[in-house]
Length: 404
Image 1 (cartoon, rainbow, N blue to C red):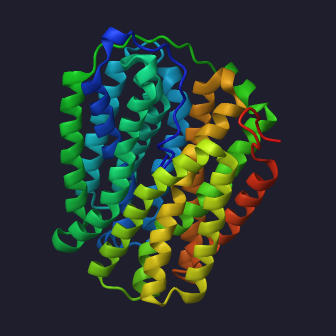
Image 2: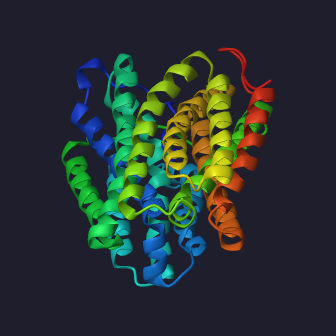
């Protein structure tokens, strides 16, 4: 919702009574979001260091992103089905424990294989969390406070977006790339403890089924929205995943300068989330088109002027800002395309985000290994242009409409 797809869960559970608001539990879910998004984004800021230490190519190291995304795509719609008889508190604690183990295994991995195992574990935690978090939030607070609760939960995305890439790059330079995963593991361990102390018992209520998912996929508006996600988000992640090799090999920035540029990306993303939410509240179609057009233009700018430190710094910062339009824009689109099955549609959206992240990491990695560091922006220009045109032509045009 990724970074991630991270901001696109469904919202179809009965709200809590007014007397039963559990704000400490909501805060613990915010911590979970922060830990998941931070762990998901770390490889992008540590890519070359990981590749050098493990003796692999940048493209191969980028598959640490692919592994997480592919597994998350499967976990998002399937975990609610597999755990439908389990207390949701138990499920969320298990997912947080898996996040702890993933970070610790990544920090000690001596080969690409072990690193990929760690990232697979992260994918399970990521997909499961995002498929259920909004429905749980609705059970933890009264209905009139749900929007405030979700804003608090999603604040974890914004904070992690600002912190993960620059702090990861800085820690990797000072103490080695493994130190960043050790820090992420410590954060996830604290999160697990807070969740264990604050989450109440949450017996299962919903009855998800494969039939519902199949019926949703037969709806043209839903299919158009998911295809737009695949194109736009894969383009974004093809460029973002391999941005560090570009800054090192094309722009020739120092590690300190790279950390500063990534901090600019994170700050841009923070304000982009605010601006994207405001614009999507008026028209999700316009929000997605604006963000897609801007990133496609920025990727093209990096292709022709990426050797300039100033151009690269400005382009990467604006890229982070533009991405903020996508999560809330696509979430609003998919819910309006299937208002009667919002939770199921949200699970499909999470899966589509993760498949798009994997596609971008794979496609960008293949191009990077074959044509160099400009392969990521090249993939981004093509995919984002196609996705933006699709949204412009078939995106929802009215608050009550679906795709047209």
